[in-house]
Image (cartoon, rainbow over all chains, first blue to last red; front, top):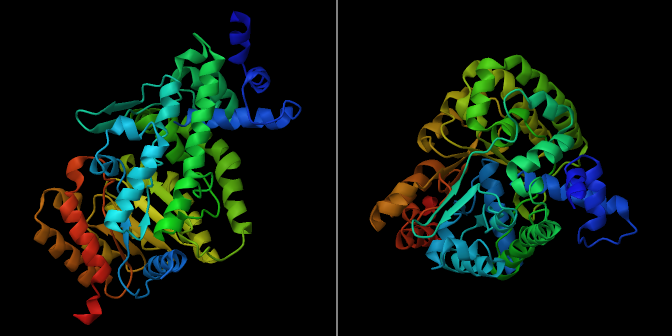
Length: 48
Length: 397
């Protein structure tokens, strides 16, 4: 877990990890769309 | 009149007023935010964490006051998402009936250029952990999943294009048109720096001590943000969407710390381009200036006529009318009078505003401040003003 946390905090590695692990309403096969959803989410919460 | 017809009528009177044409009557637009929650009898923390309650709040507000459009329809604060992520930026105090929003700087001194070169990397590796300590300390995927769902609930309520669940309900049940159908977005770098990256204090420091770095960062941000944004606007089709009251909404805040020389370098060239594109395309804009903008009115005088509704938070609307015949003036119905004046004082002010500023077009009655606190309006005063505006026609008097 500690290793995973370290990698999540890196860009762009963390995007890939979260795109795989998060519960997103996008099929697992469409990794590009999942990565984009993660990035948009991050942009959104960074502005909160 | 059907709800669709009522919405079309409301769009027309707002657009006529902005175009400096005489509307059938002066439009009345709401600038109330969390005041709505208190007026409906809920605690701030209840409504701000539950979109079903927020929907009831907004519906009750519109049933009671019958505004022509709502700048804020319950969507201003994405509080639940922020709370799940452990942010301490929002402070809700139900006892004091207040919401505080703390100034936050994503970048530290000397980091602006690094941010500008790769904003996503910076936000991911530095911004997230500064804002949400769990990101590096006790990462929990469940927190992110819950926050993602809360953010989606928020976006569904508001709508990605401001046409979500709440705006649709306002349109279908109350004949309230969509507030805005944005035609494009060209971010002004100094506003982004002020609002998100360096905060009030940091931007002031950068203006004095790190001007070269500030210029370097802005030059990069112009290439990646403003220039592509303004080009996209130039290529967009001309003409307004008559389903909505405005074609864009621009909020000026960073001007409050700029002197005239800084304004001429960091703000005016960008704002002028945006407004000029609106003029070329036949679009309209609400331009809300927080604090005072009076010292920049000679620049606003250069705006093309009939494009901008200048919403003034702290300046005198009568003076603005004299100084800026090219702009529709928005505001005037002071919260201090609505909150602490008598009903007659409120009606007298509303009548004077309509008679002197609105009889020939170019005026939208509105509250200068975002109604947040209980004292920002006495409900009886507000109801009296709202009823008066719907009936009053200055030409008949």
